Image: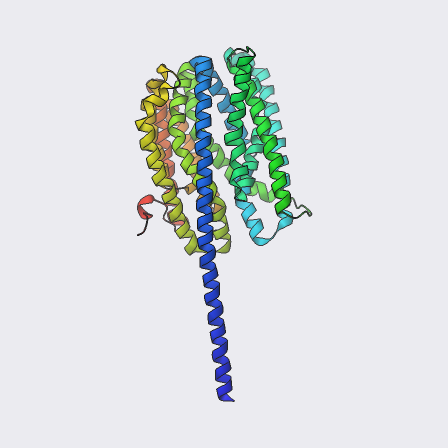
Length: 463
């Protein structure tokens, strides 16, 4: 009897050991598959952003050539307001989608998932319409205080905001499901193509190449790309998520999104405050020159965005599982995927900077020093990998929001301090210093709160 019991016990131990080995093998295989899938997603996102960068660059060159520096500068100013208001009026729901969709899918809470996707989009449209209405009303009341070349283009540009906000949220839905095609192609490829085609049609019909014509073309491009994305996304969602009831937890969504909208707002300030301050002190022509130089150098940021788009939902998934070891390994990959391609892009763009600016017109080459200064700040950010995505997905959105709020305030203060005396060089310096400050603060938050090293010097590729 004792021998039989011992044999039975040994058999049970062997069975448990084999089960653990099989589970470990499956986990390793799953981790390897997830890593390869995320690499593919990152490459797909990067490919889309490269194509998008080419299209956007071509569009900006065409607009600058056809419109001239002054009208182009006016268009840049009004479209900057669309970017800011459209990126804020959905109150951070785009980032909330990236964070909550993987969590709901992981836990099988499909009613919450359906409610988030359906309700989030309608909330974006409603809030975007409200902001657009207030903007048009404010412009009607205070229009006499606005410089006359800006008034009509501003009226037209404000019409873009509801669909711009919807597209932003749908971008988050796509990225939350790791559907890089639906997330990125409509806003970053289709929209600039439609804008360019609309401007070509306007030219063919003899319409003046002015800022209001470009703003009208932007309405067509923004609305058409948003509706097409909506229809394609509905089709994909219908085939993926079973029909059923929807549970709307608006309080939970907005509690999660409020820190995120602060983050998004501060990001928009970092990206656009320099243009708005320059428009206060310099001519529309100078605004156009600065914008061309800044957008040329900001092509580096497409690497950061592409990697962040691919890894954000994976950060959230690993965190939901509590798998800290795989999370740290994945962060190391993400940092390297961000830094080294960014460095290569920076070197290439600086080498080709003068010829690229000449494509806009010979006078645009005076913006080359702006590119050099901005490159320093962008590389400081790249050296920390997709830090903002990591902090947001792991529940540190409040601290991330605090860092970016301080950074945005610093950026505005530096711009107002430096632009009146140093013009475009002052604006570039203010932006570069602010981005470097934010990168350093994110490093400290990730190290102390998450106990994760995000700096490139701590995550060099292992041999």
